[in-house]
Image (cartoon, rainbow, N blue to C red; front, side):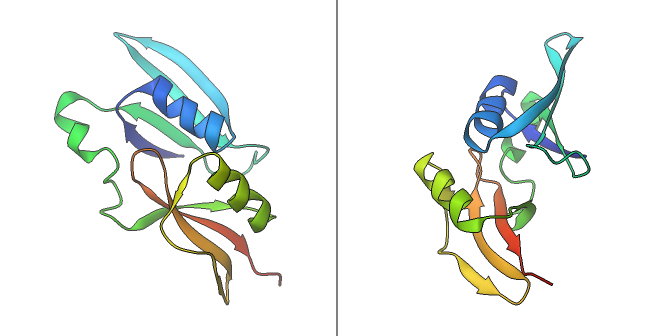
Length: 125
């Protein structure tokens, strides 16, 4: 599990569940307005998940900057073209055109906060 600082739980859930089609696996009130919110790629029981952590006021400037402008998150797909087209149609910003590398087909996109991700279909063995 990786923790991602977000400004608002519901806004983050709307993007990750509504746009990226992740599953909301946990949403537990912790008191004082805090929640334990976990999202994960749909159907990926064994994979990683994101803990969406609401930023404290002094942490707000870190939202979208946790990777210091670099790709730091990787979303694997079994059908690059399908997911790339669906994500573009949903308004996801891709910062480059898809490219083919020795390790697979990849394109960098940004989530709703500016964090950079690779959409990656690994090359067949």
